[in-house]
Length: 203
Image (tube, rainbow, N blue to C red; front, side, top):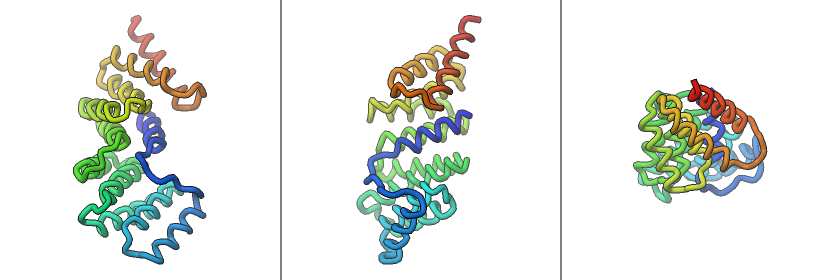
């Protein structure tokens, strides 16, 4: 439940990219055409990988993102770093958190220091039970982008899993104060967790 909840949040909080227009199959077809025209262009490969990720075609997404990395060994325009970040998101989506951690760390090593990378790394570490390391990554995401509401939820989940109830309550409350008023599934899940923690504190 925790991994699913955070995965949705992380995938919604992609770091700065050009926003795609169409989605699903039309987007894949459009970007496949771009790759056919320029098969050795790492950006075209990365964008095709992103289209496959949006279409939930994870094997194809991984193949294209790995190709984008291989075609850009010098990390020109930070493309290999970005492709590693997106590869990490694909790996998270298919429950390969240990490999996702490696991809996110590589993205950071190559210089892609965006709040979304730290947020995703925090999620992957949480799913591996590395709560203290995850907490550091979530705080780094907030340092870079103080309005990253998903980081409050991530901190709450990591603190809760680590048995630090008071800190978890604080972060869940910050999350609920920061998210839009609409009560979607993620908000409902955090409210439920918060209520249980408050009940536990009374006992």
